[in-house]
Image (cartoon, rainbow, N blue to C red):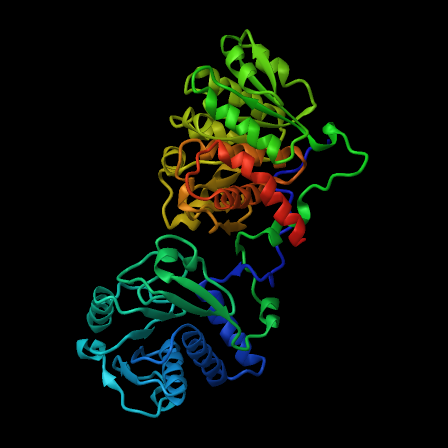
Amino acid sequence: MPLLPIDACAPPAPRHPTALLTTGQMTDADRLAVAAGTSRRTLMANAGRAVADEVMRRWAPRPVSVWCGPGDNGGDGFVAARQLADAGWPVRVAALPLPSGLPDHRPLWHGPVAPLALPVIDGAELVIDALFGAGLNRPLAGAAAQTLATAAARGVPIVAIDVPSGLCGNSGIAQGAVAAVLTVTFFRKKPGHLLLPGRGLCGEVVVVDIGTPDSVFDHLAPTCFENDPALWAAALPQRRMDSHKYHHGHALVYGGAQATGAARLAARAAARAGAGLTTVAVPHAAWPIYATALTSTLVQPLATPDDFPRLLTDSRFNALLIGPGAGTGAATRDAVSAVLRTGRPCVLDADALTVFADNPGALFSAIAGPCVLTPHNGEFARLFGDLQGDKLERSRAAARRSGATVVLKGADTVIASPHGLAIINRNAPPTLATAGSGDVLAGITLGLLAQGLPAFDAAAAAVWLHGAAATQFGPGLIADDLPEALPAVWRALQQAA
């Protein structure tokens, strides 16, 4: 099987429905929509109407308090208030003072407007937060912070327009934001809707069409996307009628002598991900343990330090994984170097990352082929501790520095390529917080690499499949269950195609 260049994947189409727009790109999209003939007032009217529709879809009429800020987000709120009042809802509107030079959107509402203060919460059974949009770049303060915090403390449900006020749309960082039960945003999501803690504060996120034409993408170049099979399903391997096992790759896992379960989990996951063959190379003394536990996986004993490099001369091993349970000694470091010298697609996880904590540059300079690094936060800090910024920024910087696809794991896993593309995952359930689940993720990635997927696609697909398998299994999950849940996920993907 020919070797693939690093991250040899086509970027998703800019107009892809899972594209995530920064606050600056969304501002540009609004400007371009106006230039294309849709007035700002029309966009605002459509946005406010959509918010009211989403509210009426979920709740019966009840006293609602709509809080409007000085910008277009406030204009959306005034329109939503009018729509709800026209539908017979009891509505009170409050607003922040209007700074000089900004347009006054209050005429969009036909009733009184009270100053934003604590009394506007009294009697409210629902609050619409139209104070600030995703571009707020300072902590929430004053009346806005006080009223939102008080409403949250009283348990009043909050509906946020665009993002909960005080939440950064680019980073998901919260500076005074409180949790909404529903967030209505427009055209496309923003990274802050998916990155923690923002995702936990947005509640249900609904994206509505307000008339922004897709033609704005002729001038926008999104580089961040929400993970979804539509991004990588076309790259998944299809089995021919006349195929045999070597058509689907031979995955090799380097196994350790003591924490033997990690490599066994990874090997099982690689096979369930579709690798035609899977071999685990293990120290000779541990061979009986692996051989007894693994039936459909080949187990290759390593008697001397030279045996592993010698094994790698077999070109049929077309994707390699090292790290799970490997140990943090010199032998692992040497084995990682041997893997990277092959230039073949590989996954470096766990101990394979930790052994380079004292000299990350040695690791990065050795990466010469398609490579996926799968650190959790601790391992990431050991390799990239000086990187600053939010999770998305740090993941991208790490991928550029290392020359590898970086999978920064967590409930909001970020997959970043060395060339700036990034994908944010959101389908991982809390049950994945169990020992060994990361080993399974590394194995799934390995199995997809063995079948010829580019590193970035393989990583993104593996992260999504990992989350889907956990969701498929449900409560009580342990890592052993994840590979066995994959067939049902594969079937669902095939049926949806």
